[in-house]
Image (cartoon, rainbow, N blue to C red; front, side, top):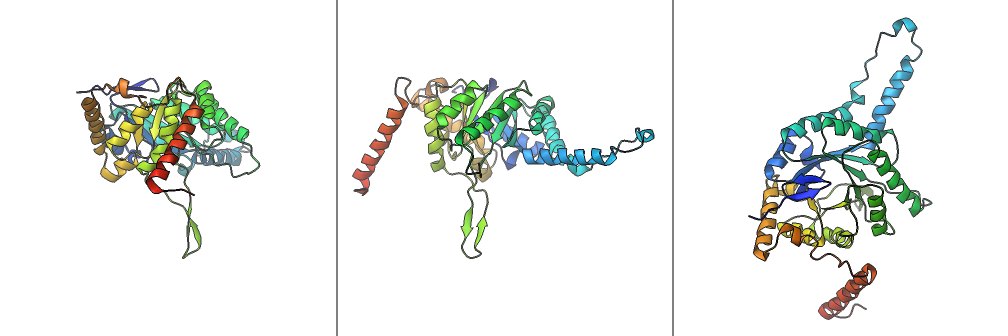
Amino acid sequence: MNDLATTYLGLTLRNPVVASAGPLSQTVAGVRALADGGVGAVVLYSLFEEQLRREAEAVAALEEMYEDSHAEALSYFPTVPRAAHDASHAYLTLVEQAAKAVDVPLIASLNGASVGGWTQTARQLEEAGAAAIELNIYFVPGDVMMSGHSVEERHLAILAAVKGAVGIPVAVKLSPYFSSVGNMAVRLDAAGADGLVLFNRFLQPDIDLDRMTVESGVTLSSPVEARLPRTWISVLHGTVEASLAATTGVDTADDVVKYILAGADVVMTTSSLIRRGPAYAQVLVDGLGQWLTAKGLKLSKARGLLAVPAEAAPDAYEREGYVSALQKAQHTYGSLR
């Protein structure tokens, strides 16, 4: 049997298939089902900056309410409303209990878009038993006057705040919408990111023509969406020190293999596990192992086998692929004019 042991963020995983952040990891039972299903690690659902800010505001409001209390009443400690603790308390409890319940690394997910006190929650997650932090920086700059440089600096500042709060590894989940994705990845790597998760899926609303309303929602990913992250993983493989995690577009073992060949250290999925259940993870793992055996390859040899060659000029390499694709399309479908 092929050895599928993998190193991600400095952590040892039994295989490179990881359950990404999503609804399946909201309970201890859910986390246990994912681990029993065969994944190498579990990323918990996200704890949001907005939830933590609301909690902090509620506590501050309560303290302000009692700040003028008579000194004789200092032994009286008002009870903070339960709602002010719900999100973080429940999440920290889940981390603590789930980390003890499974034998795979448990990665906590923090989702935010600005620098602030909420980043200090990372330390509490570490203390609760998280093996690592996945920092999901979901920032869509609605201010059209904000420069690309400002957006990049915000990402680096958030990473610095979280890295400064913890001693465990921190991975950054980023979007593909930078003017230079590769440069942003290199800068995050240099700033201390232990891993890069490619890519975040920005939710793009649709329009309901009958009701004439903007409709938002979440759809499960499809394999065609894997092409963009696979492209950038193949470029970054061997260029950055950070671990590379692929996410989006995984449906079958073939998708896992393609990401590995591009250079991914781990391959994350939620959509396929939602469609088919947590036990489907073992199908993905077995499929990867069977492909490697059929090709006579070890995992370490297959990883990055089809990445952009180190000696190639990336710009020219990508341009050559673009021109080749169009020429192939012209031959297949006729003139594109």
